Length: 123
Image (cartoon, rainbow, N blue to C red; front, side, top):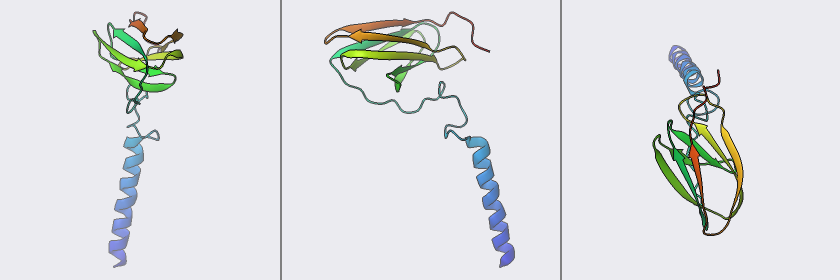
Protein backbone atom coordinates (compact mmCIF):
# COMPACT_ATOMS: atom_id res chain seq x y z
CA UNK A 1 0.00 0.00 0.00
CA UNK A 2 2.86 2.39 0.73
CA UNK A 3 4.24 1.68 -2.72
CA UNK A 4 0.96 2.81 -4.37
CA UNK A 5 0.83 5.90 -2.21
CA UNK A 6 4.39 6.79 -3.17
CA UNK A 7 3.63 6.16 -6.84
CA UNK A 8 0.59 8.50 -6.77
CA UNK A 9 2.54 11.09 -4.79
CA UNK A 10 5.24 11.21 -7.49
CA UNK A 11 2.66 11.40 -10.27
CA UNK A 12 0.90 14.25 -8.47
CA UNK A 13 4.14 16.18 -7.94
CA UNK A 14 5.12 15.66 -11.58
CA UNK A 15 1.70 16.95 -12.74
CA UNK A 16 1.98 20.03 -10.54
CA UNK A 17 5.47 20.77 -11.87
CA UNK A 18 4.22 20.46 -15.46
CA UNK A 19 1.42 22.89 -14.62
CA UNK A 20 3.91 25.48 -13.40
CA UNK A 21 6.20 24.91 -16.38
CA UNK A 22 3.51 25.26 -19.06
CA UNK A 23 1.12 27.57 -17.22
CA UNK A 24 3.54 30.23 -16.01
CA UNK A 25 2.85 32.43 -13.04
CA UNK A 26 0.44 34.76 -14.83
CA UNK A 27 -2.25 32.15 -15.47
CA UNK A 28 -2.24 32.91 -19.19
CA UNK A 29 0.00 30.22 -20.56
CA UNK A 30 3.07 32.41 -20.06
CA UNK A 31 1.96 34.72 -22.86
CA UNK A 32 2.35 38.46 -22.78
CA UNK A 33 -0.76 40.35 -21.65
CA UNK A 34 -0.52 42.26 -24.95
CA UNK A 35 -1.14 39.08 -26.95
CA UNK A 36 -3.62 37.53 -24.50
CA UNK A 37 -5.29 40.26 -22.42
CA UNK A 38 -8.19 38.14 -21.17
CA UNK A 39 -11.91 38.87 -21.25
CA UNK A 40 -13.00 42.39 -22.20
CA UNK A 41 -14.95 44.41 -19.63
CA UNK A 42 -18.41 45.65 -20.57
CA UNK A 43 -18.71 49.41 -20.93
CA UNK A 44 -21.70 51.64 -21.61
CA UNK A 45 -22.11 55.33 -22.17
CA UNK A 46 -23.51 58.29 -24.00
CA UNK A 47 -20.60 58.82 -26.44
CA UNK A 48 -18.77 56.63 -28.98
CA UNK A 49 -15.17 55.51 -29.32
CA UNK A 50 -14.27 54.26 -32.80
CA UNK A 51 -10.90 52.59 -33.50
CA UNK A 52 -9.69 51.78 -37.05
CA UNK A 53 -6.67 49.45 -37.28
CA UNK A 54 -4.61 49.27 -40.47
CA UNK A 55 -1.98 46.57 -40.25
CA UNK A 56 -1.91 44.40 -37.08
CA UNK A 57 -4.52 43.09 -34.68
CA UNK A 58 -4.61 45.51 -31.74
CA UNK A 59 -5.88 45.33 -28.16
CA UNK A 60 -7.80 48.35 -26.87
CA UNK A 61 -7.72 49.59 -23.27
CA UNK A 62 -9.86 52.43 -21.93
CA UNK A 63 -8.79 53.81 -18.56
CA UNK A 64 -6.56 50.74 -17.98
CA UNK A 65 -9.42 48.29 -18.66
CA UNK A 66 -9.27 45.91 -21.64
CA UNK A 67 -12.40 46.59 -23.73
CA UNK A 68 -11.69 44.52 -26.84
CA UNK A 69 -9.57 43.81 -29.89
CA UNK A 70 -9.67 45.12 -33.44
CA UNK A 71 -8.51 42.96 -36.33
CA UNK A 72 -6.14 44.34 -38.98
CA UNK A 73 -7.96 46.24 -41.72
CA UNK A 74 -11.14 46.75 -39.72
CA UNK A 75 -12.75 49.02 -37.14
CA UNK A 76 -14.78 48.62 -33.97
CA UNK A 77 -16.75 51.03 -31.85
CA UNK A 78 -17.84 51.14 -28.23
CA UNK A 79 -20.38 53.22 -26.33
CA UNK A 80 -18.37 54.97 -23.61
CA UNK A 81 -19.27 57.50 -20.92
CA UNK A 82 -18.65 61.15 -21.71
CA UNK A 83 -15.71 62.77 -19.92
CA UNK A 84 -11.92 62.45 -19.90
CA UNK A 85 -10.38 59.08 -20.73
CA UNK A 86 -7.02 57.48 -21.38
CA UNK A 87 -6.85 55.21 -24.42
CA UNK A 88 -4.05 52.66 -24.80
CA UNK A 89 -3.59 50.47 -27.87
CA UNK A 90 -1.20 47.52 -27.88
CA UNK A 91 -0.11 45.39 -30.81
CA UNK A 92 -1.39 41.84 -30.30
CA UNK A 93 1.07 40.27 -32.75
CA UNK A 94 4.44 41.98 -32.23
CA UNK A 95 6.38 43.76 -29.52
CA UNK A 96 5.67 47.41 -30.37
CA UNK A 97 5.56 50.27 -27.87
CA UNK A 98 1.91 50.84 -26.87
CA UNK A 99 0.19 53.89 -28.28
CA UNK A 100 -1.42 55.99 -25.55
CA UNK A 101 -3.42 59.22 -25.49
CA UNK A 102 -5.75 61.14 -23.22
CA UNK A 103 -8.90 62.67 -24.67
CA UNK A 104 -12.14 64.31 -23.59
CA UNK A 105 -15.44 63.39 -25.20
CA UNK A 106 -18.88 64.95 -24.78
CA UNK A 107 -22.32 63.35 -24.87
CA UNK A 108 -23.30 62.26 -28.39
CA UNK A 109 -19.79 62.76 -29.78
CA UNK A 110 -17.72 60.13 -31.62
CA UNK A 111 -13.99 60.03 -30.94
CA UNK A 112 -12.26 58.35 -33.89
CA UNK A 113 -8.74 56.88 -33.61
CA UNK A 114 -6.73 55.53 -36.56
CA UNK A 115 -4.06 52.98 -35.54
CA UNK A 116 -1.04 52.16 -37.68
CA UNK A 117 2.06 50.30 -36.53
CA UNK A 118 4.63 51.85 -38.89
CA UNK A 119 7.70 51.88 -36.64
CA UNK A 120 9.89 48.82 -36.15
CA UNK A 121 9.05 46.49 -33.23
CA UNK A 122 10.96 46.95 -29.97
CA UNK A 123 13.69 44.35 -29.55
